[in-house]
Image: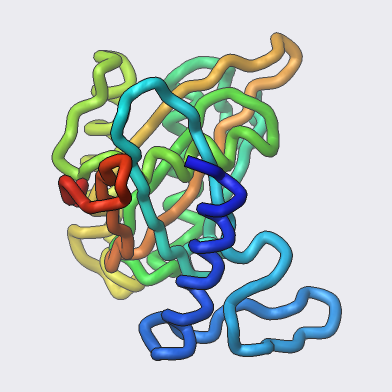
Length: 215
């Protein structure tokens, strides 16, 4: 499949969906503040292509608003204020600090996507890729699986609750991945997704027909 043609089709689909009211007019020029009502512009929509050798094509869509985007966080370990060292316990501390800082904002309860490692740019991208996982899946890495379950349990015991009004449901899920890093850096990038978790995914055959729904 030609990626240039696919991007052109995707942009036209976004424009048409916005015109029909399926997508709210939610993309503005960062210099002028102007909203042309199309949802098109530099970086909007944001597309990522990953080549593979199988015959089918998987297409995934994530619709992420500003509310949840505003409460994302990135930490550099060690963090002396939080007594967080360069280990999984230190990662645990800063991830929970991100939850505490959010205080239910971001249309909570939410889902965390986390990347341990990477650089400042790739870490955030990797953390958002975790949102493509299913809520009921299990991390194949036993240590990360244990960390996911621990953070979910602990966060829901903080009393923050939906929208910060108190309660036992602060998070609906925690998904953590790890990426290699350079020895001098140890970043932990935390992305937040609102409870609505607006996403969809399909598998396409070579002729473009849908053969399976991923979510």
